[in-house]
Image (cartoon, rainbow, N blue to C red; front, side):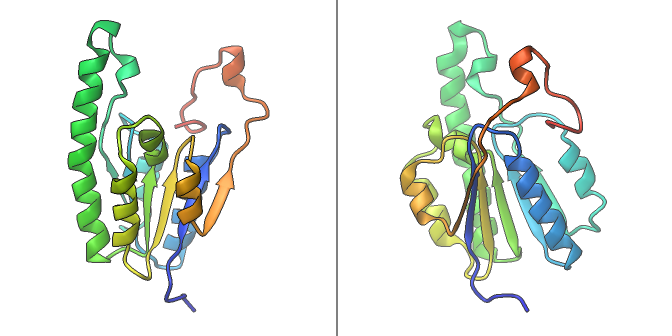
Length: 180
């Protein structure tokens, strides 16, 4: 039996697995005929999870905002790119708010949104507003590195993925199907 109260989940930390855990939850929920909406922040391009969502019978919807972090731009335009990204995120948050208010999803995942908070692309009051808009029975999942203490305090579940060892440290690039 489904609980009438939805909870707030956080998957954070420097270790691999934050998005993977959130998508595992999405897959589990879709198996129980629950509807999931995933919003991807700070990511660009096609991911394995977006491809796999097509196999869910429409139960997992992924909306990729295709945002590029300023670090990927030349130094001379990074500040301007940061301002553009901040405006883009502001507009994308309106879509998230509308979705939260509708209450059509059992689980809403805000993938990598914690990175956007940590890097000051989203203000504390905007996130607190999002959490407040969550439909009572919906689960809200936030992923990303650097969850601040005030956000952890608002969550019901918090998992900190600890980095112990990763091939990236030896120069291995992100691999399709493993890291994206």
